[in-house]
Structures are given as structure tokens and as C-alpha cells.
Amino acid sequence: MPTFPTELTDEIIAWIPAAYKLVIERYSTLLCCSLVCSAWLPASRYQLFQELWIGTAERYDLLVSRVLRSENMRSYLLFVRKVYFYTARDTFKGKSFVLEFAGHLPNVTLMTFYDGTLEGLSSHPSCFVAISRFSTIRTLSITDGQFPSFGDLRRTLSFLPSLTSLQLYYPSWPDPATALSPRLLHGASTVRRPALLGLNLSLGTDPPNRRRAQQFIAWLSETATSSSLLLLNMNCVVVLGSSLKGFGQGVRKMYVTAYEDDTEDLELFLSGLTTSLEVLHMTNDGALQPDTWLRFERLVHSLPRPTPLLELHIHFVCHGPPELSKFDGLKDLDEALQPELFEKLQAVKLEVGYIRDSTDREDGPALTGPILAVMMNKLPNLYERNIIEVSAYTFQHEPVRDVEPPTDPNDAPS
Figure 1: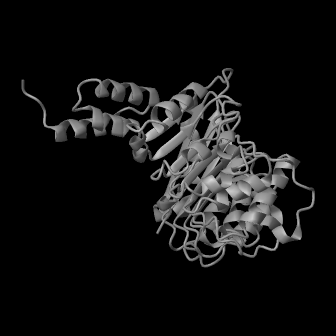
Figure 2: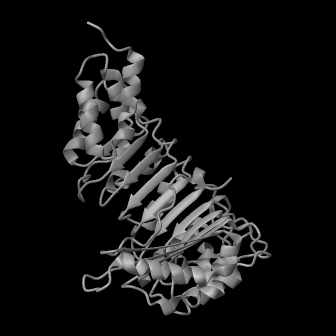
């Protein structure tokens, strides 16, 4: 009976993760491949163990009993590169992933904790010593994580020696004191770790979350991150005040939400950057008004000179079709981006999206054309330089307005 060369079947199996974007499709296909014959089993298992998706307590217990504690299967943990926890809260009560798997995942580079799974990371005081044994983790992502204390968060990040990319989406810990310690505000870089290249931070704007953001950035400013950071994405820059003084001066890519009432704070932060910023992406938070463009003109002018800015992106989300008269102020932005001040600028992208209510009489595409025409008419200088790109779109439901930048800090410009 003729058979395919092993090299060919291994190559086909290796392409399965790229062919199936959904995890359940990838897993089911790879499991089927592993049952075809013994020759297909090694390549199938190699791909199955590249990513661990732990969604239930039962799945976790099976991983421990059938793999971690099996002499024959434990070696497959060497293949693991990424670990994802996604499950209901309290699943890890009495369990500690880092204590049980410390030293058994020597090649994992990414770890993600979704809603309520953080207990598997730091449920015991001895976890912090165990965390240091995950020495190859470069990316850590935590969504809706509840830390027992701010000290737990600090120690977790400090004990990961290779950590370069951090994503914190709405984390929480006990409400900090109203007045932060002066020691956390002087901005001196005295702590070696973490030395982040990329930071994604999203927090609420209510008073407790404002204080958490200030506390976190004040501490991070004391670490090597203050000078190593290349990519910054924050929806809470404007609530940080003096905590951001001197922070991230080497940032090359920045994604920020520009709140309508906090222009002065954002101006202060942008003016404190060094001349390293190459990509600036601002998402407007608030209704589109005639003076909105003047506000962005002020923000652009606050950048230090000379600026090596290569790309400028401005994104708006409107509740309902915007009035065409609201684009009159675009000329202020057009005049602000003078070639002699922004000589390296290669691309300016303006994007306007609006939520189309079911009662709107005009169809979305019929309104998009006039919006684009008005925008192009108000930007003669940028069009003459051939660096402008404008777009408009409609949608039925409000999208997530926070911009998601590349998660790999190596994507930052060199």
C-alpha cells in the first residue's frame, strides 16, 4: 500500500493552525489527524501542545493527571509556547497553575488570563518564587484580573525576567490611598525589572480606577520600563497627571484615547516625549464638534520639535450621522501639519465611523460619500503632498473604541 513521505504529512499537519482560526476547529482537526495512524501522531501532538487552552476545571485536572504526572506524556510540555486560561470565576479555587507547572514549561512565551482565572497565577505567597521559573515568558495578558493587593501585581511582573509585553485590561486591586506616597512620584528608575517594550493598559475613569492608574504608572516609572518602552497603548493617559511625567520618553508607537475635557493633560504628556515618536494614533472620545479639529491641532502642535513622526491616525466614533458643518474645522489641522515642521510625515489617516440608528431615513452609504467629499475639500495642503487618506463607515452597534495595537513589541519601528 503506497504511503506519503513523513516529511509531507508533517508539513500538511503543521499548516492546520493557520488554516483554522477557531480554536475548536483546530483542536478537532488535529485530534482527527492524531487518530489516522501512528505515523501522524507525533506531528499532530506537537501542534496540539503548541497552545494550551484551559477552559474548565476538568480540563485542567486532566492536564495535570494525564500529562504532567505521566512519564510518557510529560515531555510534550516542552512543545508548549502559549497558555490561555478562559473560564468561569473560582475555577482555580485551591489550585495553583504556577506551583504545579513551574519548571515544566521551559519554552512558553505567552500567557493569557481571562475573566476570573488570575487565581491560578498568584493564589499562594510562594507563587512568586515559582513565577520566576517561567523565565521565557515575554508576553503576559490579564483581563478583568482581581489582584489581592497592588504588591501582588508588582511582584508578579518583577519576577518574570524575560517579560517585554504587558497587557492589562481593567485589572483591579484594593483601592489605593487618596494621596500616593511621594516615593512613587519622583520618577527615578531604580528597579531593573520589568523592562517592558510594549504596554497596553485599560482602566476605568472613575476615582478608584484613576488612583489605580496613577499608582501603577508611578511604580512603573521607577523601573527600567521608563526608558525601555517603545509601544504604548492607553485609554487612561489623561487621568494620570503628574504620574506620567518623564515616563515613556523613548516611545515610538503610541495609541491613546483623547478625552474631550482633558486636552491640557494630554498636551502636557505629548510635550514631554522625546523626539522618538514615529506613529501616533488618537481615538476621539466624545461628540464631533466644530472645535474638535482645533483641539487635535493643539495636540499635534504639542509634540516636541523636531519630530520624526511618520504616521498620524485620528479616529472618530459618532452617535448618529455627523453634520457636514462639523468638518469645517478640518482646515486647522491641515494648516498645522506644515511640511517644515513635519518633514518626515508620510501618512495622515482620518477615519470617521458613526452608528446608524434604525430610524435614520438615509442609508449609510448615501451619507458616506458627502462626508468624504467635505473632508477632502478641507485638506488641500495634505492632498497636495499626497499623504492623506480619509475614510468613513457606518455600523448598527457601537464598537469597542480602544485601538488594539500589535501585541508583539518587536513590531515597533526599529
